[in-house]
Length: 209
Image (cartoon, rainbow, N blue to C red):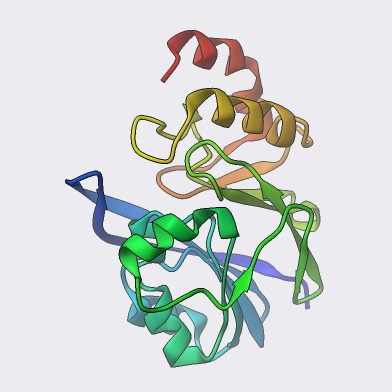
C-alpha cells in the first residue's frame, strides 16, 4: 500500500524570549494502514494518537525544537514507544521545554527515513532555528517545511536562535532547487508549492524579515 499523508491541526501556545502567543499547528502523519511517522507532535498527544488509529508509530520527527512543535512529543513517545528524532543543533531550544527528557535520536542532513515504502530525506535548513530541517518525500511530491517556508515567505527570524540571511540561503539552496510542482506542507497555515514561492525570493530579501 502506498503511503498517504494525514493532517490534523492542534492548538496551544508558542513561548520564546519571555513572550507567549496562541497558535494553531499542523501535525503531519505519513504512513499506510499499519505504520506511520508523525512530523511535529504539537500540543495534544491524545489527539495525535487518536489520528494514528492504532497504527504502529515508527518515529516522532521534529522539524525544529520551538516548544509549539515539540510540547507533546514526550507524551506521545511514552504512549507509543516511538523514538523522538531531532537535529542536534536544536538541543538548546529543546532543553528549554524538556530539560529532563532528551530526544532519542539525531537527524542529519541527507539522512533517509523510510516509512510504508516511502523515503523522507532530511534537509538541514537552518535560519528559523539552528537545527531546523525539512523532510522531502519525492514519491509523494511533497516537502514538509516546518517553519522554514510558508505560503508567502520564510519563517520568522526576529527571535533568539534565528537569522534571516541563513533562512534565505536555506530556502534558496535547498528548497527552491526542488521540482516546482512539489507541495509545501508547512508547520502553520495553508500549504503551497515550490513553484508558487520561488518567484518571490528577491521580494523576501528586500523585505528583510
